[in-house]
Image (cartoon, rainbow, N blue to C red; front, side, top):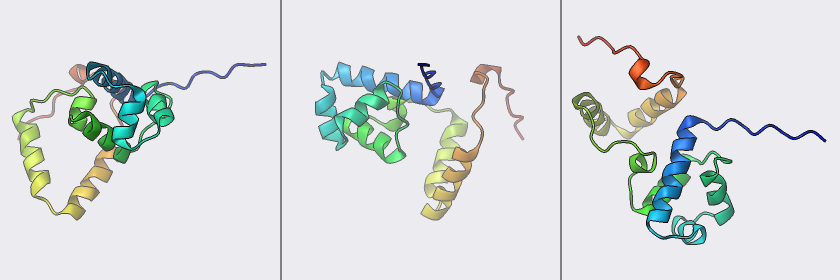
Length: 126
């Protein structure tokens, strides 16, 4: 009988998995306790921690809320933003909800870079 190859874990999901388990353990929470706080099943939450499930955006938000952290912190992203990122965030926040939803769809549809950010060319400023 052949063994199935383990599915390759997306690097973004891997970041989430590490951040989730690390934060849960820092707070001294069991999987059951966090699942209860997030209103998710312990099996589903455990599968996310192990990188076996891709969580929905709603689940990610529920987990972050249950841990009392931002979604960015859950992914291990820095809390400080560049001036350009802040400018984009302000423009996004001042846009109507319909435009925000459309922008998010476009951003999620963009291919993820295969290279580390440091290896990507810097955009020219106008």
